[in-house]
Amino acid sequence: MFENDINYKEKGVVFNIQRFSVNDGPGIRTIVFLKGCPLSCTWCCNPESQSTYKQVMFNSENCNECGNCIKVCKRDAINFNNEYKIDKNKCINCGECVDKCYSEALLMSGDDMTVEEVIKLIKKDSIHFRKSGGGVTLSGGEPLMQWKFASQLLKACKSMGWNTAIETTGFANNNILEEVIPLADLVLLDFKHIDNSKHIKFTGVSNETILNNAKTIVKLAEKVIARIPVIPDFNCDENSIQEIVEFVKSLKYIEEIHLLPYHVFGLNKYTCLGKSYRMPKSVMTPTDDVMEKFKNIVENYEVKCSIGGN
Image 1 (cartoon, rainbow, N blue to C red):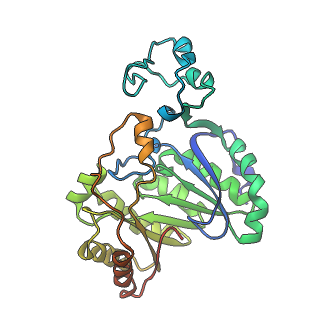
Image 2: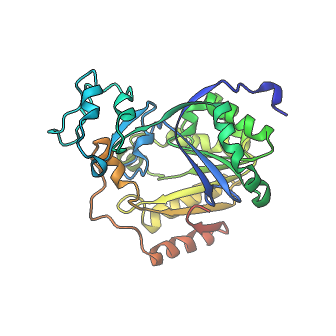
Image 3: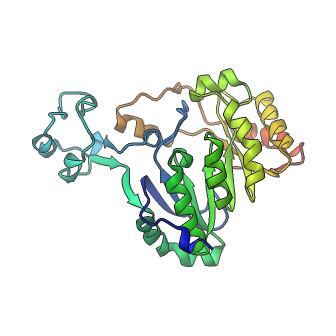
Protein backbone atom coordinates (compact mmCIF):
# COMPACT_ATOMS: atom_id res chain seq x y z
CA MET A 1 0.00 0.00 0.00
CA PHE A 2 2.77 2.46 0.96
CA GLU A 3 5.82 0.67 -0.48
CA ASN A 4 6.53 3.31 -3.11
CA ASP A 5 5.77 6.25 -0.82
CA ILE A 6 8.11 5.65 2.12
CA ASN A 7 11.23 7.66 2.84
CA TYR A 8 13.35 5.12 4.70
CA LYS A 9 16.11 7.72 5.07
CA GLU A 10 13.94 10.10 7.09
CA LYS A 11 15.65 10.73 10.43
CA GLY A 12 14.27 11.14 13.92
CA VAL A 13 15.56 11.26 17.47
CA VAL A 14 14.63 8.10 19.39
CA PHE A 15 15.37 7.79 23.10
CA ASN A 16 14.13 4.26 23.74
CA ILE A 17 12.78 1.19 21.98
CA GLN A 18 10.89 -1.02 24.40
CA ARG A 19 10.23 -4.57 23.31
CA PHE A 20 7.69 -7.16 24.50
CA SER A 21 5.24 -4.63 25.94
CA VAL A 22 1.66 -5.72 26.64
CA ASN A 23 0.47 -2.15 27.13
CA ASP A 24 -0.22 0.71 24.72
CA GLY A 25 -2.16 -1.33 22.20
CA PRO A 26 -3.31 -4.89 21.45
CA GLY A 27 -1.05 -7.94 21.70
CA ILE A 28 2.70 -7.93 22.22
CA ARG A 29 4.13 -4.60 21.10
CA THR A 30 7.34 -2.74 20.44
CA ILE A 31 7.15 0.86 21.63
CA VAL A 32 9.30 3.48 19.93
CA PHE A 33 9.81 6.55 22.11
CA LEU A 34 10.48 9.81 20.26
CA LYS A 35 12.05 12.87 21.88
CA GLY A 36 10.29 16.21 22.08
CA CYS A 37 7.12 17.37 23.81
CA PRO A 38 5.35 20.75 23.84
CA LEU A 39 3.98 19.99 27.31
CA SER A 40 5.97 20.01 30.53
CA CYS A 41 3.71 18.08 32.90
CA THR A 42 4.78 18.33 36.53
CA TRP A 43 4.42 14.54 36.94
CA CYS A 44 6.17 13.54 33.69
CA CYS A 45 7.79 10.12 34.08
CA ASN A 46 9.96 10.60 30.97
CA PRO A 47 11.63 13.99 31.54
CA GLU A 48 14.31 13.07 29.00
CA SER A 49 11.55 13.08 26.38
CA GLN A 50 10.71 16.76 26.73
CA SER A 51 13.72 18.12 24.82
CA THR A 52 13.94 17.42 21.10
CA TYR A 53 17.72 17.19 21.37
CA LYS A 54 20.03 14.46 22.58
CA GLN A 55 21.07 14.88 26.22
CA VAL A 56 23.84 13.51 28.41
CA MET A 57 22.49 11.93 31.60
CA PHE A 58 24.65 11.29 34.66
CA ASN A 59 23.99 8.43 37.11
CA SER A 60 26.18 9.09 40.14
CA GLU A 61 25.63 5.57 41.50
CA ASN A 62 27.69 4.11 38.65
CA CYS A 63 30.48 6.69 38.74
CA ASN A 64 33.90 5.55 39.98
CA GLU A 65 35.48 8.97 39.34
CA CYS A 66 38.08 7.53 36.97
CA GLY A 67 38.37 10.91 35.26
CA ASN A 68 38.15 9.66 31.67
CA CYS A 69 35.24 12.01 30.97
CA ILE A 70 37.15 15.05 32.24
CA LYS A 71 40.15 14.23 30.07
CA VAL A 72 38.11 13.92 26.87
CA CYS A 73 35.78 16.92 27.36
CA LYS A 74 37.04 19.78 25.19
CA ARG A 75 34.67 22.31 26.76
CA ASP A 76 35.68 21.75 30.38
CA ALA A 77 32.02 20.95 31.17
CA ILE A 78 32.64 18.22 33.77
CA ASN A 79 33.64 18.89 37.36
CA PHE A 80 33.37 16.29 40.13
CA ASN A 81 33.03 19.07 42.70
CA ASN A 82 29.70 20.13 41.23
CA GLU A 83 26.54 18.44 42.48
CA TYR A 84 25.44 17.28 39.02
CA LYS A 85 29.01 17.00 37.63
CA ILE A 86 27.99 18.42 34.23
CA ASP A 87 27.80 22.15 33.53
CA LYS A 88 24.76 22.48 31.28
CA ASN A 89 25.92 25.91 30.10
CA LYS A 90 29.11 24.42 28.68
CA CYS A 91 27.98 20.94 27.61
CA ILE A 92 26.98 20.61 23.93
CA ASN A 93 25.89 16.95 24.28
CA CYS A 94 28.53 15.76 21.83
CA GLY A 95 28.70 12.40 23.58
CA GLU A 96 32.48 12.03 23.65
CA CYS A 97 32.43 11.67 27.44
CA VAL A 98 29.75 8.97 27.14
CA ASP A 99 31.99 6.97 24.79
CA LYS A 100 34.79 7.02 27.37
CA CYS A 101 32.62 6.22 30.40
CA TYR A 102 33.15 2.48 30.85
CA SER A 103 31.17 2.38 34.11
CA GLU A 104 28.09 3.70 32.22
CA ALA A 105 27.60 6.56 34.65
CA LEU A 106 27.24 8.81 31.63
CA LEU A 107 24.53 7.88 29.16
CA MET A 108 23.22 9.59 26.05
CA SER A 109 19.47 10.05 25.94
CA GLY A 110 18.49 10.07 22.31
CA ASP A 111 19.87 8.57 19.15
CA ASP A 112 19.60 9.83 15.58
CA MET A 113 17.96 7.01 13.64
CA THR A 114 16.52 6.56 10.18
CA VAL A 115 13.22 4.83 9.51
CA GLU A 116 15.23 2.03 7.93
CA GLU A 117 17.30 1.52 11.09
CA VAL A 118 14.24 1.42 13.35
CA ILE A 119 12.40 -1.03 11.10
CA LYS A 120 15.46 -3.30 11.03
CA LEU A 121 15.38 -3.50 14.84
CA ILE A 122 11.62 -4.00 15.02
CA LYS A 123 11.70 -6.87 12.53
CA LYS A 124 13.19 -9.03 15.29
CA ASP A 125 9.83 -8.89 17.03
CA SER A 126 7.59 -9.49 14.01
CA ILE A 127 6.91 -13.14 14.88
CA HIS A 128 5.40 -12.00 18.19
CA PHE A 129 3.21 -9.49 16.36
CA ARG A 130 1.80 -12.22 14.13
CA LYS A 131 1.09 -14.61 16.99
CA SER A 132 -0.42 -12.05 19.38
CA GLY A 133 -2.04 -9.53 17.06
CA GLY A 134 0.44 -6.97 18.32
CA GLY A 135 2.50 -4.35 16.56
CA VAL A 136 4.26 -1.03 16.98
CA THR A 137 3.30 1.96 19.11
CA LEU A 138 4.85 5.41 18.81
CA SER A 139 5.15 7.21 22.12
CA GLY A 140 7.26 9.93 23.67
CA GLY A 141 7.36 12.70 24.46
CA GLU A 142 4.87 13.71 21.83
CA PRO A 143 5.39 11.77 18.57
CA LEU A 144 3.66 14.51 16.59
CA MET A 145 6.61 16.81 17.39
CA GLN A 146 8.54 14.66 14.89
CA TRP A 147 5.63 14.22 12.54
CA LYS A 148 7.63 13.68 9.35
CA PHE A 149 9.58 10.87 10.95
CA ALA A 150 6.48 9.47 12.64
CA SER A 151 4.47 9.40 9.42
CA GLN A 152 7.21 7.59 7.47
CA LEU A 153 7.75 5.12 10.30
CA LEU A 154 4.03 4.35 10.53
CA LYS A 155 3.86 3.87 6.75
CA ALA A 156 6.80 1.47 6.91
CA CYS A 157 5.17 -0.50 9.73
CA LYS A 158 1.88 -0.76 7.85
CA SER A 159 3.71 -1.94 4.73
CA MET A 160 5.02 -4.81 6.88
CA GLY A 161 1.48 -5.69 7.92
CA TRP A 162 2.02 -4.66 11.53
CA ASN A 163 -0.66 -3.13 13.71
CA THR A 164 0.15 0.54 14.38
CA ALA A 165 -0.69 2.80 17.31
CA ILE A 166 0.29 6.25 18.48
CA GLU A 167 0.10 7.74 21.97
CA THR A 168 -0.49 11.48 21.75
CA THR A 169 -1.58 14.57 23.62
CA GLY A 170 -3.19 15.83 20.43
CA PHE A 171 -1.22 19.07 20.65
CA ALA A 172 -0.31 19.77 17.01
CA ASN A 173 -1.33 21.70 13.92
CA ASN A 174 -4.30 20.38 11.98
CA ASN A 175 -2.24 19.54 8.87
CA ILE A 176 -0.02 17.30 11.02
CA LEU A 177 -3.05 15.45 12.36
CA GLU A 178 -4.30 14.86 8.82
CA GLU A 179 -0.91 13.47 7.81
CA VAL A 180 -0.26 11.16 10.76
CA ILE A 181 -3.47 10.07 12.47
CA PRO A 182 -4.94 8.02 9.54
CA LEU A 183 -1.75 5.93 9.54
CA ALA A 184 -2.46 4.57 13.03
CA ASP A 185 -4.82 1.65 13.61
CA LEU A 186 -5.22 2.91 17.17
CA VAL A 187 -4.85 6.36 18.73
CA LEU A 188 -4.28 6.56 22.48
CA LEU A 189 -5.40 10.12 23.20
CA ASP A 190 -4.55 11.81 26.49
CA PHE A 191 -7.02 14.01 28.37
CA LYS A 192 -5.65 15.70 31.47
CA HIS A 193 -8.14 18.36 32.57
CA ILE A 194 -11.09 20.35 31.27
CA ASP A 195 -10.28 23.39 33.42
CA ASN A 196 -7.90 25.44 31.27
CA SER A 197 -6.24 27.34 34.13
CA LYS A 198 -5.32 24.08 35.89
CA HIS A 199 -4.15 22.60 32.60
CA ILE A 200 -1.81 25.53 32.04
CA LYS A 201 -0.51 25.43 35.62
CA PHE A 202 0.33 21.71 35.58
CA THR A 203 1.28 21.12 31.92
CA GLY A 204 2.56 24.50 30.74
CA VAL A 205 0.09 24.79 27.84
CA SER A 206 -3.55 25.63 27.25
CA ASN A 207 -5.95 22.75 26.60
CA GLU A 208 -7.85 24.71 23.94
CA THR A 209 -5.90 23.24 21.03
CA ILE A 210 -6.04 19.75 22.55
CA LEU A 211 -9.81 19.74 23.05
CA ASN A 212 -10.45 21.18 19.59
CA ASN A 213 -8.07 18.69 18.00
CA ALA A 214 -9.80 15.80 19.75
CA LYS A 215 -12.86 16.51 17.64
CA THR A 216 -10.71 16.22 14.52
CA ILE A 217 -8.78 13.16 15.66
CA VAL A 218 -11.87 11.04 16.31
CA LYS A 219 -12.99 11.67 12.72
CA LEU A 220 -9.58 10.85 11.21
CA ALA A 221 -8.76 7.80 13.34
CA GLU A 222 -9.87 4.23 12.86
CA LYS A 223 -10.12 3.75 16.63
CA VAL A 224 -9.46 6.04 19.61
CA ILE A 225 -9.03 5.14 23.27
CA ALA A 226 -9.05 8.02 25.72
CA ARG A 227 -6.47 8.05 28.50
CA ILE A 228 -6.67 9.98 31.73
CA PRO A 229 -3.57 10.22 33.94
CA VAL A 230 -5.00 10.40 37.47
CA ILE A 231 -2.84 12.91 39.34
CA PRO A 232 -3.38 13.90 43.01
CA ASP A 233 -3.92 17.63 43.60
CA PHE A 234 -4.67 18.02 39.88
CA ASN A 235 -7.54 15.85 38.64
CA CYS A 236 -7.81 13.13 41.28
CA ASP A 237 -11.36 14.04 42.27
CA GLU A 238 -14.81 13.00 41.13
CA ASN A 239 -15.73 16.33 39.53
CA SER A 240 -12.56 16.51 37.37
CA ILE A 241 -12.91 12.92 36.18
CA GLN A 242 -16.60 13.40 35.45
CA GLU A 243 -15.95 16.54 33.39
CA ILE A 244 -13.37 14.72 31.27
CA VAL A 245 -15.67 11.73 30.75
CA GLU A 246 -18.54 14.03 29.73
CA PHE A 247 -16.32 15.67 27.12
CA VAL A 248 -15.07 12.31 25.83
CA LYS A 249 -18.65 11.05 25.66
CA SER A 250 -19.63 14.12 23.63
CA LEU A 251 -17.11 13.11 20.96
CA LYS A 252 -19.32 10.06 20.24
CA TYR A 253 -16.61 7.96 18.57
CA ILE A 254 -14.69 6.96 21.73
CA GLU A 255 -16.00 3.86 23.49
CA GLU A 256 -13.16 3.14 25.91
CA ILE A 257 -11.22 5.04 28.58
CA HIS A 258 -8.02 4.03 30.40
CA LEU A 259 -7.35 5.48 33.84
CA LEU A 260 -3.62 5.74 34.53
CA PRO A 261 -2.74 6.16 38.23
CA TYR A 262 0.09 8.51 39.18
CA HIS A 263 3.47 6.89 39.89
CA VAL A 264 7.07 7.96 40.53
CA PHE A 265 8.91 5.33 38.47
CA GLY A 266 10.80 8.02 36.53
CA LEU A 267 11.94 10.00 39.57
CA ASN A 268 15.61 9.01 39.25
CA LYS A 269 15.71 10.39 35.70
CA TYR A 270 15.34 13.92 37.04
CA THR A 271 18.45 13.49 39.15
CA CYS A 272 20.32 12.09 36.14
CA LEU A 273 19.31 15.15 34.11
CA GLY A 274 20.14 17.60 36.88
CA LYS A 275 16.49 18.65 37.12
CA SER A 276 14.15 19.12 40.06
CA TYR A 277 11.01 17.01 40.31
CA ARG A 278 8.16 19.47 40.76
CA MET A 279 5.61 17.16 42.36
CA PRO A 280 5.66 17.29 46.19
CA LYS A 281 7.15 14.23 47.89
CA SER A 282 3.94 13.92 49.89
CA VAL A 283 1.93 13.06 46.78
CA MET A 284 1.10 9.36 46.72
CA THR A 285 -0.27 6.95 44.11
CA PRO A 286 -4.09 6.88 44.27
CA THR A 287 -5.38 3.87 46.19
CA ASP A 288 -7.16 0.98 44.50
CA ASP A 289 -10.42 2.12 46.12
CA VAL A 290 -10.06 5.60 44.63
CA MET A 291 -9.30 4.22 41.18
CA GLU A 292 -12.27 1.86 41.36
CA LYS A 293 -14.50 4.79 42.30
CA PHE A 294 -13.36 6.68 39.20
CA LYS A 295 -13.81 3.55 37.09
CA ASN A 296 -17.42 3.36 38.25
CA ILE A 297 -17.93 7.00 37.24
CA VAL A 298 -16.71 6.21 33.73
CA GLU A 299 -18.85 3.09 33.43
CA ASN A 300 -21.93 5.01 34.58
CA TYR A 301 -21.63 6.84 31.25
CA GLU A 302 -21.75 3.47 29.47
CA VAL A 303 -18.10 3.73 28.45
CA LYS A 304 -15.79 0.75 28.79
CA CYS A 305 -13.06 1.44 31.32
CA SER A 306 -9.85 -0.17 32.58
CA ILE A 307 -7.24 0.86 35.12
CA GLY A 308 -3.75 0.85 33.62
CA GLY A 309 -2.37 0.96 30.12
CA ASN A 310 -4.36 -1.77 28.43
